[in-house]
Length: 129
Image 1 (tube, helix red, strand yellow):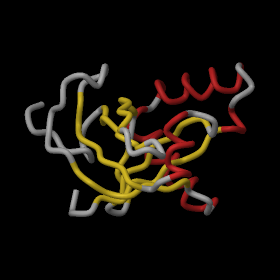
Image 2 (cartoon, one colour):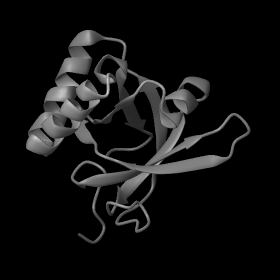
Image 3 (tube, helix red, strand yellow):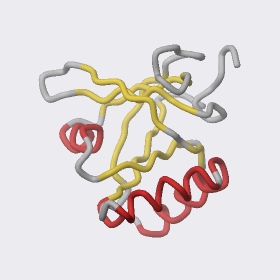
Image 4 (cartoon, helix red, strand yellow):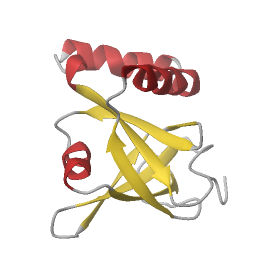
C-alpha cells in the first residue's frame, strides 16, 4: 500500500512528545471519523501520559511494526476524548474497521482488569486527511 493515508491504513505510526521535546513513535490501530483519527489505548500508557503533557502529535500510515512508513507524515494535535457520545462513536468506528480483532483485544483488556482504564485519543490533523 504505497503512499497510504492515515485514514485508510491498517496501522499508523503515532508520534507523541515527552516534556523535554523528545519524540516517541508507536504503531497503533486507528479509525477515521469526521475528519479526525481515533485510537484506543490504556489510560496509563506512555502515549496517553504524553498527550496529557503536550497535545503535539504527528502520524503516518505504517506497517505493523511501525518501522516502515507507508505515506506522508501529518502534523496535528491530540487529546483524550472526554465526551461519552464521541467516545462511543469512535469505538464503533474502530470496531467496524478491525472487527473480531478489536473484540479479542478488548476481551484481553477485560481479563487483565484494564478495560475500565482505556481511553480514546482524538488526533486532529493540521491539514485534510
